View (cartoon, rainbow, N blue to C red):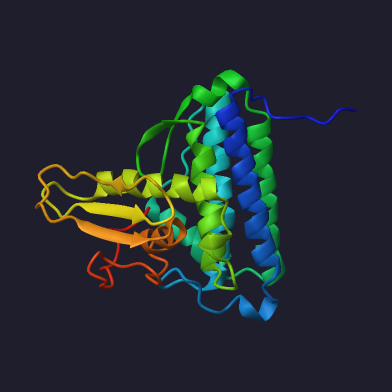
Length: 251
């Protein structure tokens, strides 16, 4: 019996699914490298243990699977009923035995992958609503998961680094940082310019009515992503050589 494959012909979506699956494998590898007795240690997400982080990544896959099911069936399925329900899921998941937490992540990832695999090509354009309320095409769920698994693999704090990421992913994350900041930073706030020293292109938020003294941050593209996602400010600086202030917040 031939293997079932994605109902996808768009080369950009094919590449996006591949990048997500590479990220899922990276997350799984870093998770497998954790010993059971390390699950109770802190993650790099402020206020979260590794248990909470692992539970979040597992339940996030389930939440996205609901969106993909919505795109496939036309019957609305929200990611979460409420922010409170999302928080309760994570807190509950953190109480599970270690093996159950590992299984949650593995099984939820497989379920999401099957939902993507079986999504008819035309349904990839169907709109679904994110937890933040945005209406987006189902294709956006791939990027939502891509960010989650790659960045949170670093947050396990057991050796994962943004420098492990493929260059094309680092570039996409730089663009995503700027896109998110354009939504979050208020009119009249200080503009932000990212200047990767190993890339030809710089990235500017371009805030309407900015104060005219943009914050310029320099470093390698990977180090700028690390700073921009709130994972550390090592090896980044302003043009004056100073340590930059914390990034505006992401996602």
